[in-house]
Amino acid sequence: MEDLVQNTFLSFYKAIFRFDTNRPVLPYLYQIARNELKMYYRSHKQTVSLAETLSSKREETLVDQQSATASVLVVLSDEQQKALQLIGEGYSYKEIAQRLGKPLNTVRTIIRRARLLIAQHQEP
Image (cartoon, rainbow, N blue to C red):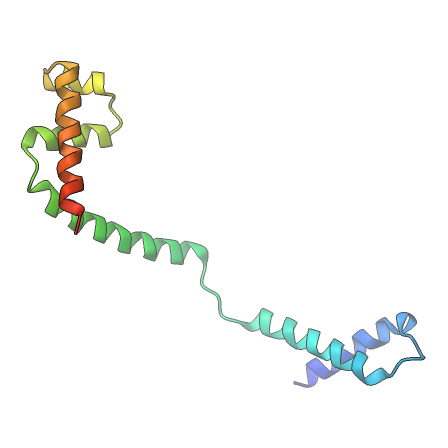
């Protein structure tokens, strides 16, 4: 606490040339003391790194997504699951059609129906 008082008077001494002698000194000192106190609390407050916060929220989100995904996959056929998995891996519809050995429009239909089933399953 003595450091705060000392810093207040040091700040006042450094800025004495800007001080208006026609005004009272006490409000000026109170303002300097208030600013010193704010700086003290800012420098001593406990912080959590952004990486820790993001990683914990990311883990919670992943767990929620995994449980939701597992419950949705039950209603999808194997073909629909495979098509959605390939989309997730970044394949285009054309590449998926080649991998599944199906025509392009059939793959589009499979994926569309899978998405509709997922949307229906997620509605309350």
